[in-house]
Image (cartoon, rainbow, N blue to C red; front, side, top):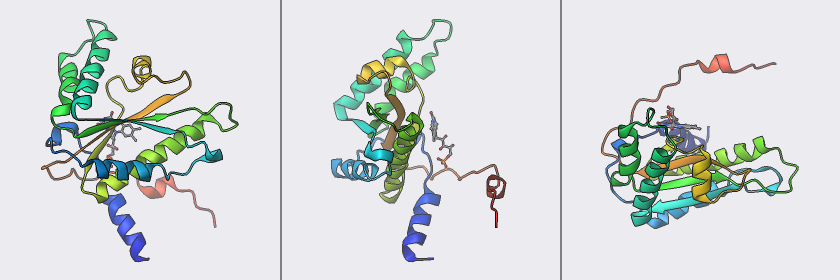
Length: 195
Ligand SMILES: Cc1cc2nc3c(=O)[nH]c(=O)nc-3n(C[C@H](O)[C@H](O)[C@H](O)COP(=O)(O)O)c2cc1C
């Protein structure tokens, strides 16, 4: 293997999801957020549609976003299903998280590219950011919690009918050691290799 492969392998295998509650409130410099967005922009995509879009929330805008997210949850949940702990969790994420980036698939119209491929390209952009974050010592969570997939989030972000939010990427730092990586299904069971 090459040194480049070994470095990449180290970054890929060391990357772990980190819960916002394990983040410590330390703020990521803007240049590093920009560097992650630049990595995202190099994701492969079919037909050069570059379907990824990013809504970056930091500072006071992050606090506002958390309030809006929690409010959307409250407004769109039946009273009997409403969970105050979930509301408070959404509301207070800004206290531990440095930035939240809403990563959106913006459907190109008209296009012959299947929507599945637009999702796939946007997911690749997200993974580029996760790996870049790992290499920079930044903790991250690809979250689809709260209202991520709900029409109310689409409206908040001003998305079109065919657009979708694929992630609320929570970024920050943590003082807690990363959790152990777990893969439950042996790799061999996932491979059908014909020779
Ligand atoms: C599409 C997608 C959605 C996810 N949504 C959530 C989520 O809402 N909350 C959460 O805690 N983790 C979420 N995760 C992170 C997974 O829980 C995590 O990747 C998985 O447990 C494997 O752990 P690892 O990332 O440390 O390898 C999501 C991951 C993906 C790919």
